[in-house]
Length: 322
Image (cartoon, rainbow, N blue to C red; front, side, top):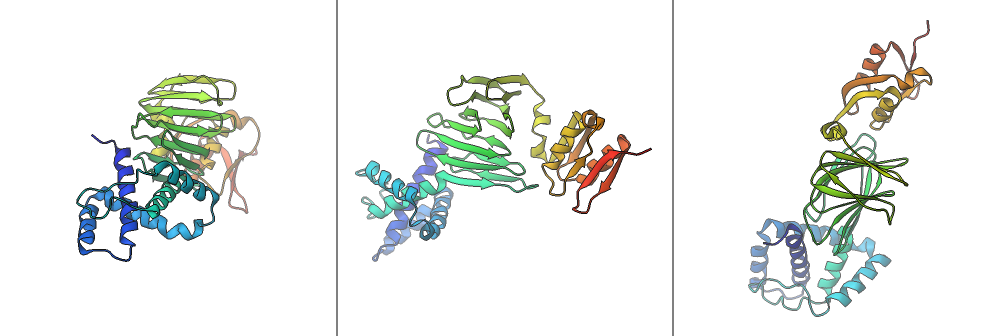
């Protein structure tokens, strides 16, 4: 049985071949009928739509050095083994150089893609291999798929990865010094100033720090805190750690300063905490992401704080003056 990745790649190759053939000066009625039969398969129709979208962008990529290199590599690798279509497709045995150009350029286009969210935004990205990535607020990933590896760089923020299984192409997430390797699993990665944290929801992953760091195997329900010099793994409440995917911020005995920082991740008009003893006071509660007013009302009421709105829209929390 073909893997999802194999099916996607086959559809892509066939779509490139069809695009080249239908662009020829002479196209027979039989070839057009064969194309419509091929396109009835949903995966094939999706592949052809993606190729057409790429083709519309090629004018902007004409002078790109990486595109040229990808095409040169593809021409040298694929000489003598161009994409083949089913026998019912007439005239497809020799697809021609344009097919290789389209296929190589398309793979480059899909294999090196950046996705990002703004402050307060969340987004689900479907990758070409069948995996999905849920991006949290202010996050950015760069996707680089190759024949032997699926690499995603988490350049900023936090993301939940639901990985499609492909034992021949490990799925690797690079987040600063942290490197997470999986085959098919669900896990959350969050970058921070000192490194990254990895929370495993299901399956098994290996986490390493630095390029040559020793890999640590994680089990479901564990979280790894990866720093430049060490990786610490401990059991955690997965539902709590991944509550952001449900649109919630869950605080359990969280120091007020940390709670404010977490709420601010989703806000353009921030909450500011006046310095002092309040920073370490523990707070509890469940808040909807982006609901600043609910958070301010709860903590100011529970801790007897003064909430003052500033000219720039921010709110300052401070102890009430006697």
